[in-house]
Length: 116
Length: 118
Image (cartoon, rainbow over all chains, first blue to last red; front, top):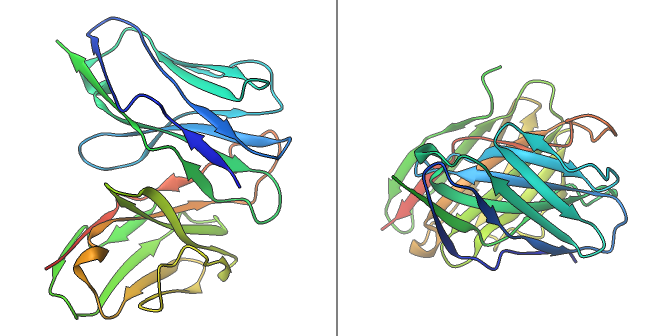
């Protein structure tokens, strides 16, 4: 069974500052995919960034980057130059690569508030 | 691309009534997923389809829930009879066959249906 743990239920950051959201996971698969999704108050689930486990290079998407530590099974999200529009719930998710493991397993989420 | 389309966006119904949620996946995607989000349980998978065939329905809470995918562009999730504890946001997501090196394995979510059962 796959598990995803987000240990920070809530976080806050000043506008323009940098914040890091933590995520740890457990899986028995050697290859898998990790994702961060953002859910603003509108409830829409928006993909922020993704990482393939077989790639050592950390993924980056503009102000968003990850620190992927495969041995430690850690996948943290760093948001640089935080903006008010970044206020949202952030979910870490894991998907396997084997047959029958295409569904996402989500963490409980971290509520991020960006303070003006 | 229009993205994943779900309807209705909001549904308020009374206990015991039948509820039908609808989803149109992204064209060309052959995987379709139904998730439910509640405060207590977070996001949980209910069922997913591949090429219109249900692959894993172990997350469906009970016999009151059923899902169908009659064709590649349409799926329904039905609750009959509905109960107050079914109140949640229901998401539909789609993706295409996972291929190494591409973004096909990423699931794209619809806007969700917020269901309230009174």
